[in-house]
Length: 393
Image (tube, rainbow, N blue to C red; front, side, top):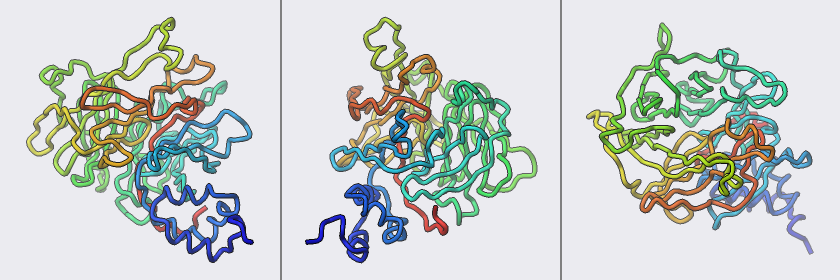
């Protein structure tokens, strides 16, 4: 009698043809070793086109040497399940995510590339020497203080779309490039600290939120003769809207004519506090949401996200329709500050959870120590479709 692990390729190929989402593919890989290996031959072309039904949380890298080739993923679908998948491309790499891809930075040469964690497609990008703040800590290869924080795409197709750009925040700098470019192009023209960036697909503009919620914009797709410079779009009227301090903020495309700014507030513990041992130096206490109209230039406070759920952290900020595994009117967040955890021997990053806009309640997404920082933080993977890419690695 044939066992599951002995099914012939033609039957596995039929099974693979019934897959509808990335989550189905992940479950397919986890049945047994032979099914996992079969994905490199009989299923590769099929799974390239599969969309993701829900976001996934990729945990931090394990600190065990025997498990460095794998990452654990938490799936919001299927009632919340964990799966371990091979991802050697991310070993000892600093990672952030956007559009379902990872942007990784190499340990020694500040070597950057895009990696799709499910198809293992890799796209090389220029090195990061254009950033003046870049330096290397030889004792700990982590880049403290001036690290890569955000990345966004101008479109979802890295190879066939001529308008495709990758934009990143590195410390106090912003830059962008296209696959095949020899270097990153700097963007200048803001004041203060950088919080977040978003590319508005309808407006075809890059928007940046910085200190005190000030928003800037620029066009990075059309060819320009001179340096790329941001233009101040609006100052956030925080006091008028009941938000006198913007210590951290995220920016999202919110329909065809608006931006959503999400302000994150944290409570900082003292070392003797009981909560310090569990969460580290701080814990998220509240989020506030504000909408900026791109047509009328008006700000308003939003007490509800409606049927949407927002995801923030070391990923490009995004929103999806709630329902089933994703609760609407909620903010799903991960820890996105490196610096406070330098002195903690066991790592940090426990500030992960779900914030309910209706009543301000915060609940945990999972109960696991897998979320601690050990080189690369936990982050959300945005739903995305894999384009047809030749020469997949």
